[in-house]
Length: 261
Image 1 (cartoon, rainbow, N blue to C red):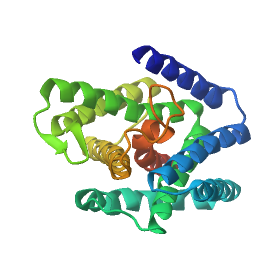
Image 2: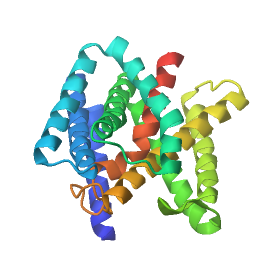
Image 3: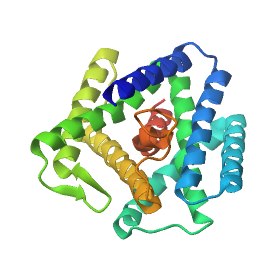
């Protein structure tokens, strides 16, 4: 299993680097849309849709991406604001109460999870391929730091009814890891991060929403009675399993890049 996970991870990284550094913008947009389409199919599976409903949801997501692409300058920031409102104001009480969306709301939630993430990936790449890679690495660093700090120091469960392995100590470790990572990136790129309190608050928000995104997908899987969102990535499960943190963090990072520029 470990060998399969490593091989899949290397192939994914190689594919990502090709999309980031070798493809033109329209091809990168299509590649990201393909990821969004698979994520849409998996989300529809999690909420109990039949095959026809899954296909319709995938088509809706792809047409939404196309429409956003054609009017990116005005539509993209609005998408990120909608996503930000969802992850900050809606998702936390949703997790606490363990809500189950009804037939219409479940698709709307999937749309809010997937389309702004697609827009964020494309917009961050437009800022520069390295910037999207740096943004993606924020959640990778947070996940790795949370895993090791949780294993070493974890005592207090974060959300035992949703994801028993996650701890508050892991979240703290993720925050420390991301702060260190951000400082290293700022030093290497010569980026001015502004006041230290504001910088820390921004990173706390990013780490917090990445955790919420992770837990939200875990809740959806638990309610669906499955371990993984899909099977397309050997050793890793589905696409949603790999981008759960990114779906919440990337819209915030894209919005920050938009305002900063």
